[in-house]
Structures are given as C-alpha cells and as structure tokens.
Length: 169
Image (cartoon, rainbow, N blue to C red; front, side):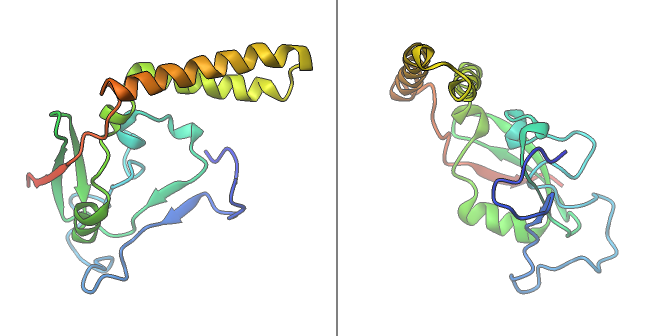
C-alpha cells in the first residue's frame, strides 16, 4: 500500500504505541475482545484515514498501535460531528492531551477536498508543462488558493475544536 517514502524511512508501518507512558503497555494482556487499539484507522477491515477524508492508498505511511484496545470511544467536535474509535488507555491520554484539536470533517469539507485534489493535479502538471502553459496553471492554482482562503475566512473550513472523547463501553 505504500506509494512513496518521502522521508526515506524504508518502512511501511510506523509504530505509535505509547510504551513510554508508565503502565500503558498492555501487549501482554489477556483481554483482546476489542482487537487492537485503532487511533489512526488502519487496524480493522474498514480502513478510514483521517475520519474518511483521505484515501488510504494515498498515504505514504501507516501509523499503528500494538496495544490491545481497552474501550470504545466516541469523538465529538464542537459542530456535532462524531467518530467511533477503539483505543488503549495510553492513546486516550495522548488524544485528550494533544491530538484533539482537529475535526477532519470540519477541516476538510467536500469542496475543500475537491480544491486540494485540483491543486495537487495542477502542481503535478507543472513539471511536465511547456513554459508557455505555466502562466495558465499558475492562475488556476491561485484560483484554488483564493477559494480555499475564502472558505476559511467564512468559517466553512474550521478546526471543529474542542473535540471531546467519551467512553461508550
């Protein structure tokens, strides 16, 4: 599934297991009914990267946690968007402390995703374009930027923060 290795790490999977937190390593536990901790969306059959706003095949790396999940949670943003997660207690602490400042649905509404994809296509075409085609591409890229800025100013693109993590199991 890895498409490229921009940081030259020579790995497909990156480990984010919170081993450094005292008492948060549960890899030797016996309770495994919830499966593995899944804070990044890769640990089950329904792969959802950044709340389903990104395509898994476009990600250069996959982050995962080797701990077993200890409970089910619902993450709710200030605008009412909800996402379901199974997490270990270490990731509950990490998400509550520093990973809960962005709602994917608030930050990446459908129109913003379309504009981002269009901008990426334009930038990819830039290197293969003849010099006389580049001014047209620059104008198209500037149009994308201007519309995204307007969406941010109008509040269509926002963080959705604060996010609240609530245990449901």
